[in-house]
Image (cartoon, helix red, strand yellow):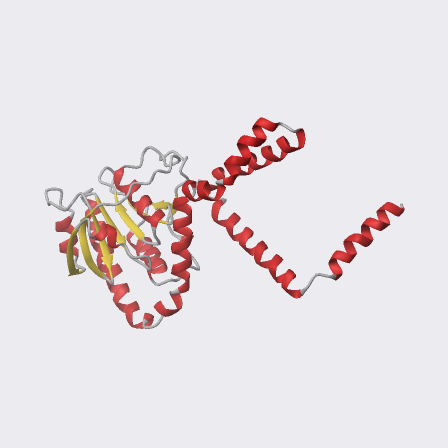
Length: 285
């Protein structure tokens, strides 16, 4: 009983010397761990993080059991752990830093937002008309809307147009005999800035096999930035929207306009009310 009391006293003494900055340090560490957990739990990085955690637990077990050979190998592996983690989680680190930079400039971006809202709504209306004209004829198309993360690398892979948004222009670009129809159109500042752009394909192994190259490109570019991508399937004429590595399908003209307004006007309170999000392992009916 005395040993338990001594233990309680020992713990209490530690609490009495805790300063305000110690508490602040603990809260900051807790916040960092919580944000890291939230970031990786729905990404492929979650599986990799679990694997690293298991290796770390195995190293502790080897230390307890005095397994010298395994202890030697694992200790040298973790000596270079930071470099290994940076290499393994490079896409996730890049995405996290881009989102951090994105959030830091949103306040500046909001200046003049009311002025641009009307132009953005008109642009969305025009593009919605073009998209569903293309869907009627099952003409494949992919239109990417640049947001806070600049898409300069992808823009330079295409042909710079910097043209006013027009239904007829979009229909001509994606006409199957046109030279730019295989690439993507990138919209910047409510203008058709570039056409025939090459986009990175998503390497997510969980994407269902029914999705073609255009859909994989839309998912891929949305994994690498905060952009929004609209895709028209040339097999079915189904209209889809990709954002943050997820794809939503079966839009009507009205629901597509609503969804784009929510994304492009920064109103995220009801982003998931329209469109059906695909689970990557779900078979398309």
